[in-house]
Amino acid sequence: MSNRVKAFLVHYFTAIGAILAMLAMLAAVDERWDLMFLWLVAAFFVDGLDGPLARKFDVKKFAPEYDGVLLDLIIDYLTYVFIPAYALFVSGLLNGWSGWVCIILIAFTSVLYFADTRMKTKDNSFAGFPGCWNMAVLVLFSVRPSWQIILIIVVLLSVSMFTNLKFIHPVRTKRWRFISLPVATIWTFLGAYAAWYNFNMIIELKIIFILATAYLLLAGIVQQSFPKN
Image 1 (cartoon, rainbow, N blue to C red):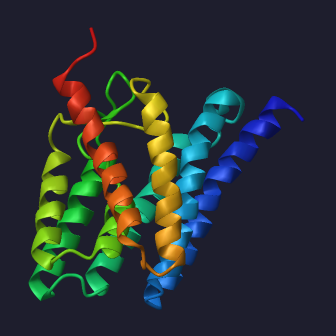
Image 2 (spheres, rainbow, N blue to C red):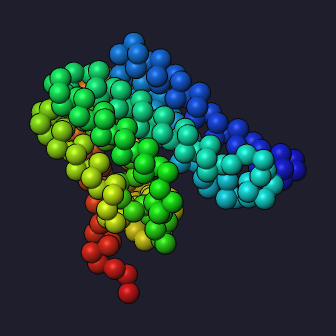
């Protein structure tokens, strides 16, 4: 198989995320939140693999006809932002006015962030919260805090997009990667477990889920506070 064919196959693999986004949206319209998140977790898995594959097979060199970054961003906005925001609004976790505030904030700040050329830091982390609302909303569905807590979380994460606070990429941020990768893997399996069992998790698994989420959210900020010599 030629390098060009391999590179195009990577693009096609990335494009599977659009199919998964459509399946997730159809499930969301039917308020099948468990099925919706299963499709989103599958999309999250694809998104975690396509980047390393694109670099390995050098898609920019062998298949430049497709802009892999743009393709990835389009799918990410659907799976990371648009569909989770819709689910949060329709689910009943928020009351009337707070639901409107949250979806407006999420949609508006995220589309600006995705177009921001300064989103990546030198160590391949993110400057500001990288719009991973699929992860945040999945945790909220599993833990089900009060609407006031959800509103505060959405506001804080939205504001953080316009700061220089660092958020790690579990695969590409080298510092602490030996911890970040296992934590991200555990988070993915727990997220899939939560969706599979319709968000009925024993308290011990919920605690692990929350701790894994906290690590992924705060590790970059801690690294920033204690820079590497």
